[in-house]
Image (cartoon, rainbow over all chains, first blue to last red; front, side, top):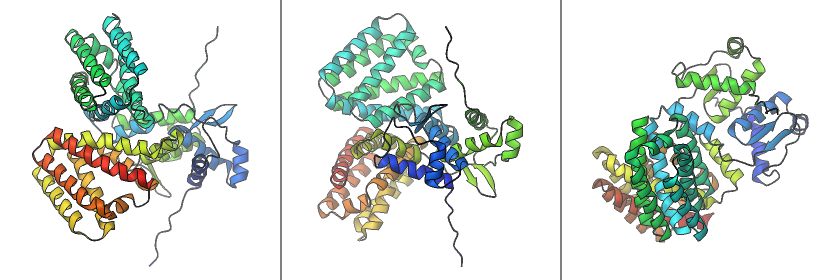
Length: 232
Length: 232
């Protein structure tokens, strides 16, 4: 009996080589790739195959292709997961609730990690953010500060992968529900309770109490998710 | 003063349209796309742009492009996140530890969710898996069953997004450390403690005790991560 021969597409081999060069350090973030013409002759494949590979790597978020300047390995990688995650979300036919839940799942244990690692400087910044969120009248500004509050806690976990994924999920939720934070913060009955939650989270982080940080973050995210479900 | 004009690339517009058709239900998973020629005339863009878009969507995991058959919206989406997550991992220069930690972060709260949702049937399957893991002599089989144990708990969370992401992370860890589960299970001093952990997790799930499920899963993942760090 014959067995099927797996044909690897040419552009897949090009992607594999570029990934390999990043992996072994030959290419670093910010580096410019050789021109399409040079890549084509170095790899011995057509320029069309090179172009296919480069486009795919651009969509995935690995390359920044600037017209007239060339193709660069991305430096700022913060939102790169957005594309594939959003596509997965669409194809999975996930309910928005699953996305909210995923964020909750990650934020709860991230708060526990943050409680272990957070510095005095970061605590001071969180303290200031809580005060500003309480004092500002403008819900647009509040919404921006609230996002910053959660982002700072994620950063305090010292895990850049977690920061990237939470940013991606946050962007995804923003694209699903316009002005979600704005609307939640605008709701009078939420104002005091959100301020109370923020303070509880802060106190747990200040005491470096991981378990308490997880518990109060869970309570906070449950309130937020109830609000998001109403809005979605 | 002039402001910069943002030029959208043609293939990006093609991707946008295809995504839109999936979003509004015109295209469903398993559906075949029109031919390159038809797409080109329907969208009024060159076949080269169509091809760029299709390749990119294939790499992202949205399309399955079968030579001679055509381009299909992917049905099986389980490992699609692998590519972008692994690229992110490479570019971020993340330590393997960050990946292990991300898995722990997600698995702990996933166990809490599973405790709420798990059925009698699923509990029975977990019970059987624990017994088999204990009894089998072959570490290769143990490793496969152990993976199945964690997968079943993720599925019991009823959140398909969490299942997909945990699968992706698991594949990524497998590619970083060859035979990690095998080696951890082979270690004599781990055998009894892993069996004990599995039983604790099962008992918490059976009592539908979310907090306990999270606590014992955290304990279990900490042991696993300590082992992974030694291996990496």
